[in-house]
Image (cartoon, rainbow, N blue to C red):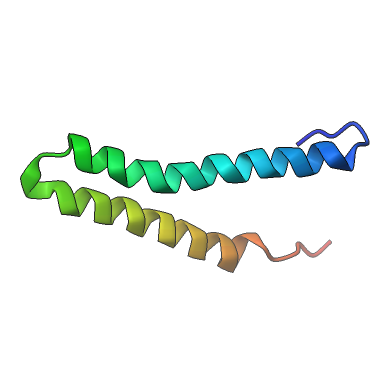
Length: 69
């Protein structure tokens, strides 16, 4: 995120991005359960939740290490 020297802009951007991601995790499974056919409704919401969980674990495992220079 570009901040042009303002840390307040960075904090505001991170807050807005965090709210957006939080809404996606809540609204995504609800939307999937509404549009999915009844026989696979649970599978769709479980796959979405599992994908989110795996991506969080992947990011924590591989995305937070500092690069050696």
